[in-house]
Length: 500
Image 1: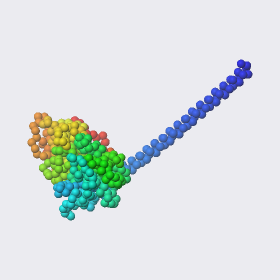
Image 2: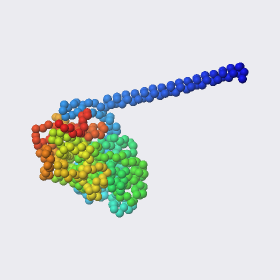
Image 3: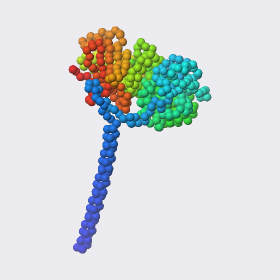
Image 4: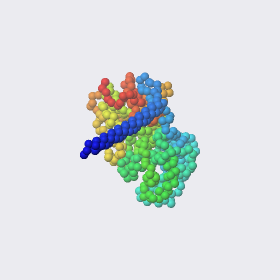
């Protein structure tokens, strides 16, 4: 190769190198610039979101006046936190009833029904006599369902009639309805808590709200996706409209189903709407004493009680209706907190204490962990009347046989509201029964005759994240009376035993 050709080749190689150099540099610059822009945008977006969040937080959360001893500063939430602002007037109840049982079960309806406030219809199989001044909902006769086939040998044709309660109520054309809530004539609703639960949901959308059975076998036999009618369930207005359009055709497709609620769920499956589970709706497919269940109620608003005629009265020594009427004295003081559990310890006497507000207080000797106390004790039998702990849809614990570990049970006897102190006062008394002999050398709760529980009503508790209330043992000079305070936890306060 000549020197001229060699020089030409070198020049071309140098130009090629320079060209690639500028291409690489240019590419790196573009990559860096785009990355910087994206980061700036992302940083700006995050800052805007945080500012909006902090602004909303600062305007919706305020510290209330601090009580010097009892109360930590409660959170006061803006009413805007109630996203859909559902009120009792927006709800219509459809009550499935039987003429044969109405004279007895109407006493349960009277407990929760509020004349001129609640709206709803009792759907009956035939006409019954009713006095005009009883303060009960209007009674209507269900439409004839003889055209529908029913082939379940263990069930009853009334299931067809009851399954159409929501659709028949819808066709009455009532105004300003957001939700249709269905229950049985032996379902007792805590209506304020039903409102609180439904306020979480957008009533303009398709929602089917309720809960499963407590019986694992019942849910297997029927469906875990089914809302049990006895516990009560809610259907949003637009979903009720869609259900009414297709329900009769749907019913014809399922002649072999047992009840009304499984027919509703079958239609919901065809509509593609799943169950939104709310653990405060209680079917109570159990027998016996509800103490274990109610004393360890889940951290959720109590919405309903069912199978009142099957279980024992919730307060011993009273009729079933009278016991529920007694419970409603506490419901009227603070419906949001009814049955909510609190756990604390008396460190001086080495006792464990569980409060089910408005219902019962229990004291154990020694230290029982919160993990154990929040687990229902098996004071009841399952729906098939067997003491089988595997038959429930939740964890349970056995009732202890050790004489020193048996709880001392104090049922709510009286309750009132102290306007001056703005707090509810409940007195819980122990049912007099012989206590088993205990050899433990420690203070015995047997000396306590009554427990006074102080609490400030908290109507906004379910607008905050779910948490158990805290309780504290208050000082007293009365050896036979214990004073407890129940309410919002202070910063860093937990349920733990600390030695004095």
